[in-house]
Length: 225
Length: 225
DNA sequence: ATGTAAGTATTGTTGAACAATTCTATAAGA
DNA sequence: TCTTATAGAATTGTTCAACAATACTTACAT
Image (cartoon, rainbow over all chains, first blue to last red; front, side, top):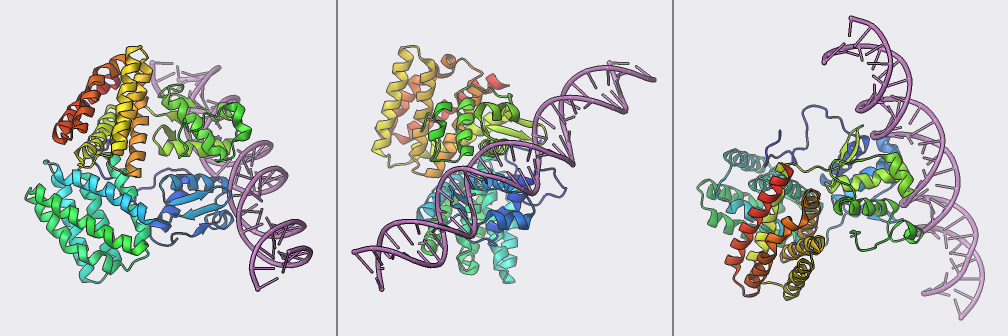
């Protein structure tokens, strides 16, 4: 059915309507609001307001809260309500620790899936095009897609899911920053990294990626400290 | 956070449960039943039965289901009920792919936390003692603890959580096997791996670990195919 | 056997209700 | 003025009962 390293964990839009529960539907809507910045970190999610707006029952809404809490996008404080997660500097450092592990293992792999490489080329091209046209939010989207595909080189569904979750968490910090200063510095490096991967220079790719992640971490730490 | 074992509360202590929500409490009980084999893979969890037994409402129980579903211990089939997850060979292969990544990165690290090393020694000693006394279930527990500590060398909370979840999933397969034939072959290797880690021979440790994981995967694949 | 239709059981979702807890605003006391 | 106390309001935690939607079972007909 689904290949070991397929990207289904990342795709957000499904072409045909899939039967899912109301709770998952509500969770999907809230997830999108959080990751796309409609709900900023620290915001409180009041049950009465959301039940009215989404037209679901409180019980169903609470099931959705459980889902998103487990994804670390919401924080559930007992008797105090549900809030959009606020990442601490320690969280950002931890996320980059995991990214180094996942993406590092990915580029170190000798057997690169050619389909993934093609997808990487597309992502880089999309990012460059968006940058040229000043669509910096789209640059960010393409950048995240690039790294999601990098992670997929590991060929593991679970790693794909972990990566998707990590990047969703990272978006919580992105919203506090100007997307241009956040993504512009990393555009040429993605292109360079792609070139190294295509030519099989894994060691150099690994080194470039390491410096990439170190600098990205520094930028984000400065933003949320 | 609310891992099984932190509070060994059962039905009697329920009135004193104040720290966490009822849903998390129910999830903790079900999680323990699944990981400890009280509920075998494929078993169906009927709402009416469990609400009666745990004395929680259906809504609360469903919140617990959501939690455990997200942990991949339960499988939620729409309109068809909730089942204890049955791992496919592909799942086992995927889990070992992630283990190779996580534990590989851990042993490759140059800076080993001395506290973790001490904990590793304890785990190995516990396993050997349990084996000598024929307590093979305890051997398994110590073995899992050993590898959880290995993962913790990465120094990342999120990696620790991922590893804990992976090992919980693996237990689903363990229950289909004799714990002796499952763990006995790996006991001396844990000791050997520990020795290599203590003496800083990371490359050798990495190699030993790789062969260890390859063989463990083969054993489990044979068991669940 | 195969397929179909009716009846039953279970899940999906809702709304109301009430208890438990937190928040808020006001008043009393130092 | 600043705390502290406290009553009241607001919100969350949990349960229950109801009904709709779906799946499962059984009996029957072909």
